[in-house]
Length: 112
Image (tube, rainbow, N blue to C red):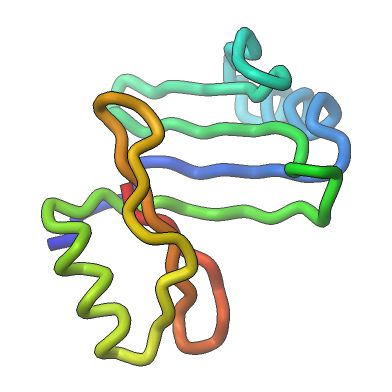
């Protein structure tokens, strides 16, 4: 079952400007020692946020990621409910697997 929002990503044309905005607005400390200076914020609660430049300079977006104990089952349920898998389950780090889907109106949501 999907349980809670675990990660939020904000990307746009000017990653450093967005990083400064969110750091100043929310008092977030960002670790930008990542590929392309992608800024990571971590909360004690486990919530993380990533802020940076859009891939290939494209339009920005905000995506929230929901923790799912059974991501494959959740994606199957999403499709049964009229959603569409945009990116299948993909391992991005040894301990992290993500997927993206669109809801029936096209909003992109992530599973982690």
